[in-house]
Length: 184
Image (cartoon, rainbow, N blue to C red; front, side, top):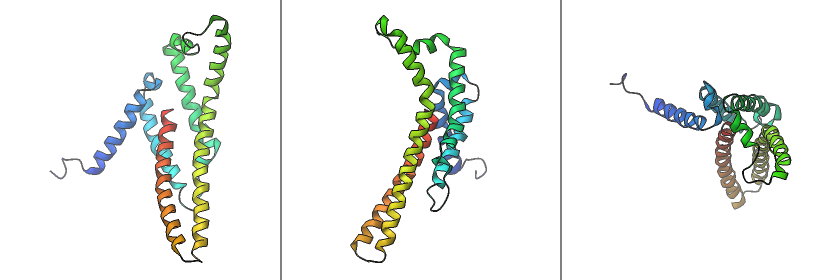
């Protein structure tokens, strides 16, 4: 029975893959063959890159715009092209909100087009800003904690507790940012 029953690692991996595959199927990428097979390793890779950025004195790739755009732009472009190819009427209808006055339609189409084109850039900048802000706060907490080592008191214990809690919070942020990047 040892060789025939999967272990905990298999079930953890299988559950993780099912969650990501279900999320990928809900997007417009469901018409692209192998899209969920691309998103799952990308999600794991981004989690790994984000978590390695939490190691002190390491260079975090996920803090740079080029990293986010290198993954975000091709995926966004493939989703747009597949949506135009497989369901052009839905794509065009998405550019014009329902119930808008007729005289406002050309302006709304222009605004929605600009929004769709700028979306990968704004998403990438938002993700980078969240990761960088977390790294800055961790660095500041580390400096304050290192300074408190020279003045032992209850302040040191409080700072160590805050830094430990914030590090766990940053681990959660790394996971959430990877999820958001792959979902959007």
